[in-house]
Length: 240
Ligand SMILES: C[S@@+](CC[C@H](N)C(=O)[O-])C[C@H]1O[C@@H](n2cnc3c(N)ncnc32)[C@H](O)[C@@H]1O
Image 1 (spheres, rainbow, N blue to C red):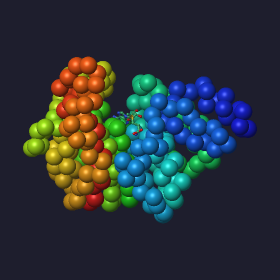
Image 2: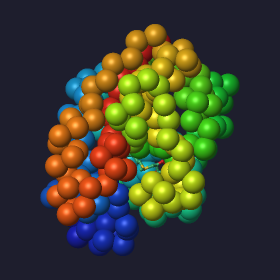
Image 3: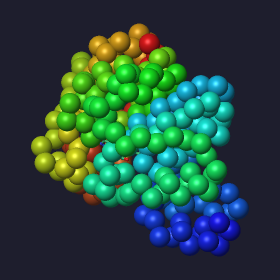
């Protein structure tokens, strides 16, 4: 496929990730994905590592791990890839072809992941998926079972003023107008859940913004919003 043909194929797809496909073609994703790498403290080097990217969608992080030397990368998704979501799998397929990538793919629900089916991976990514889980502790148990060493997780957090472990539940579309969002823990809750499923060391690498920044952000809209004030996102690394 030449550059013009690739450009035309890219235009047919509704992208979430912005992926540099080379030759000046960058997918027009909603999400400025590369900008997230620093906050995630995404490792510079994956040489020889096996990587599992759960909830991969267009695959930015899978392709990035491969580019940084991973020996094997398996990208997993269910909802978007099987047609239920805002986007589809076409972006992942086209990016993989354009990048001449060897990233493997598996359509699977998080709760169906098991070491007997896919083995265990040196590094596991779980970015932007935990709050979509109806059963988050069970999901983390399944993820721990397929993680050999290192999990990198990014998620929405709530109840940020609460200093002991807690988790907010969303009935209907209460979180961001999206009925597929169910739960968001606070930071101590998330760290304790990770310990409860077998991670020995947990480090917060991308903390929620300080309260005064969140306050300024919520009142910039002209009206104080308690929900907006008490919610943000976090990135953590956890090791077995
Ligand atoms: C907000 S997107 C995050 C995409 C990507 N990980 C990122 O951070 O840019 C959530 C992704 O999780 C997937 N997902 C949601 N529920 C899932 C489930 N139960 N099993 C597997 N994937 C799921 C969606 O299809 C979607 O691709």
